[in-house]
Image 1 (cartoon, chains in turn yellow, cyan):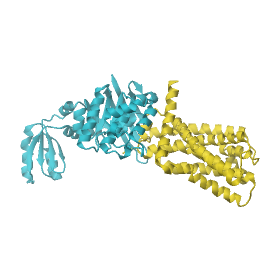
Image 2 (cartoon, chains in turn red, cyan):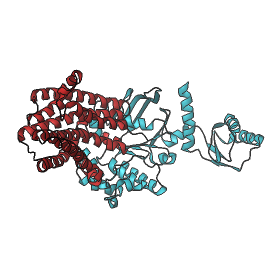
Image 3 (cartoon, one colour):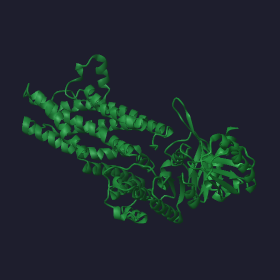
Image 4 (cartoon, one colour):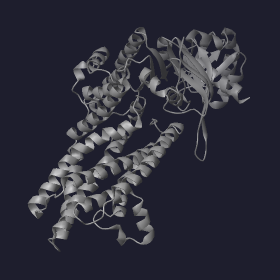
Length: 259
Length: 311
């Protein structure tokens, strides 16, 4: 019980860290304002110039929001680790009793805060500009939760990469969710892919998470079972990889930034 | 009882050209002492500290801190130790209070402890200042405050006074003494021999990844069997320095910018030294005598230690 309380405090410590950084650095707030809005308007205005079909606008609103959910759940924890690394303080954090999964959950606190803002923006603008409304709140929220689960798994993988590659990891970590999003068919069915890519897409939990979202609009067939199975598979692989990566990083002395 | 024990620790960093950072290092630090680790850049001091606190795994050997095996019970060890480095960066934009609060949460200590460590290190007046904008002296006090936030039983201090002006370094040394008096065991690495002599009960000399000598400052000085050092004002050319090094009774020669320092067994070495100097017709500005310092001992012992190790 005592250890659980301490663990919660360490998770809160990471949330506190992100909050202070965001409070002092307005640039960090762009990822919940300017950048998502650029994505939202470029996609929705492009689609809106061809059709006013509400389901198409719906796929864009829900898909873009689902993508941002995955992105933030993936990125916040790694950003936290990399901040400490770049500022030359990583050894001070890593000698504390912190555990790697506490970075993930600390990042998730910040992700929830940012996504609340983005959801208000996307759903509000979707309603006032395109007259889009969520029809099935329960199923839609479940779809968003599914996207958050994918983000957490990606976050575990990315943290492992950060342990191993340190400063060089960031380009990969940024590119990773975008590549996954393209493969997962955020705005289109994965049946457009050639067979080998389609097969790969079917193994990704993100594909099934976005299908759950699209299913609320009648644009895809959602399968919670497939989602859970692929998430469990990738989740296990991610945990094994990151535990191994941390051991390797300790072996190679990569948790200390030498002078 | 020993607070830190390292047994036959070795570490080689990989890559295309593997580098042996530590070779068969063993040491024992007693509870409540300040143990100094002296060595030049690249000697292995930081790697040894990283292994002792569990940040880096050794290839061979074992480490125990407060009786706990670091490899097996790292999480428990992490509650008992902390680190102060003399060249750490800091998170930008955080104030002293905010950054210490972050560490207080990481260690699960109450926020009141933040005020306490700020008072202990004298940084209460810098509570709302951004740590990144503090002068190096204040910043080092901040790091000490961070280093004691969890009331560590063992504090690892990696060159805590590096780059500080005289006043700031003195203040940091006073804090180190106070910490030690309160029962904290300290492992201190430093380049400054006088600092080690002043603060440390025992000193380990490390060179090229090996501990080449260990003991109190007096014991280390006794190991070189030298009574005197001769200081020759002037720049001696390398052939002359080689001749002096071979002269009877001369234990070692070290040249810096304007002084050549000879460590000799006793005053009888003076005659052959003078003969060498007169024969060389070198342009000298003066000769004086001095007692051997820890710096002399370090130069002699690291040289001898490495030669013995190579045999």
